Image (cartoon, rainbow, N blue to C red; front, side, top):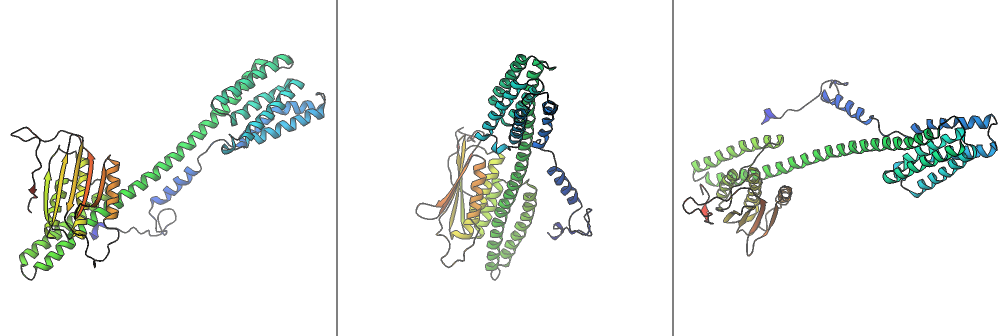
Length: 424
């Protein structure tokens, strides 16, 4: 398959795929990735600092000497600004801590004292207090907090009864400040969470595809190479005595190799669909070449294509392990089921690997693990272990749709008649 394997080598590269050993499209991918990283997130705390300019009116009153007790007012102004900065600079992790609520409470007390004591432009600290509530509070706490602050702001503005600002405007502005701030921050945080979720889903999809490909490649190559080894040994044994039979085995090896190339290409693109009948036929060929007699018992409803594909993988892996490790003389396949479930049991009468046989890491255990994951994803299960008395058993169970096949003469379900597999 040399013509199918292409090595990609860049030729010169500075963003066009030349000289860096990368493909031309990689520069655009990196550029899109950098653009994705620069996408705006939630507004930072610095975006909320300019709103402190609403307090310039109160500062002007202190500077021009229009406010009584200027030192007390200046101390209150400094305390309010410090508390405001402390609140808006608290990140999402510290938002629900008790310190955040104590800071809001202190800020509310300072705001109420300044508004009652001075009135006028000092009432504009209520919208700033509501804005700070919008950065900390959420859900019911937010509704209760903003409505309470708006109601208190309206009541204080009506009580003071001085200034150019309408009391209802103060109340409305106070409520809107907190509600809009919370809505913007919540929306931005939701967008960030969705973006992170999308990236995580993309990474998960890549991991699943890698797992699928490695699992398919293991199952394909493990079975195919086992068949090639068995048939090669058969050809070597037959060559000195029966050249025609040896050539038949060599022809089978060529056919298996070509089929393996096709299956690997299909596995790479993800479009390979197994067939239970095809896998059983290949199992018959591999078992016969290894000197193992295959027997099939089949009953139950017709199988959906997905169920057939999964059971085909079970047959492939089970036969691979039987040929490589069992030293069996007979291998039976029992396929039975009802209208809801289908069960495939593969049993051999072997004694296991020879004591002096070299260990083959990665074969069998990895394949059975992959099969278990495949079947579990489709609502099935897999059990593998020593058979009672002697041998090894692999049992797979899956959900199935459709009605069971009936005998043409009696109309009753087919019985469990043992039959030899075709060509055995």
